[in-house]
Image (cartoon, rainbow, N blue to C red):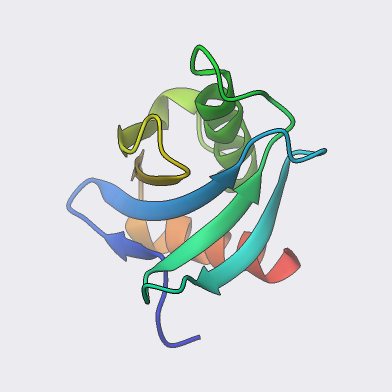
Length: 106
C-alpha cells in the first residue's frame, strides 16, 4: 500500500474517510483509491445522515477501532459530504499502526 489515507501531524493524524451512511452495519471496509485519485479509508455506519448522526457514528467507530476516547476524533471538514477529513489526537505512529490493522481487516 503505497498511498495511505492518513498522514501524521504534530498532534496525531489527519484521516480522509469516505463514509456510507445507512450501510447496514458499522465497519471499516479498507482503503480505496477513488476515481479522482484520492485515497480514502472506506467506512460504513448504520446511522442515517441527518442531524449529525452518521458523523457521530463514524467518530464512535473510529474511536473504538483505534482505542482512543471519542473526544480525540473530530470531523475537520466535509460535515455534510460523504468524503470527510478527520483529525485524530494522539501518538501518530501508534494511531497509524492501528489504522493499518483496521484497514487490513476491512
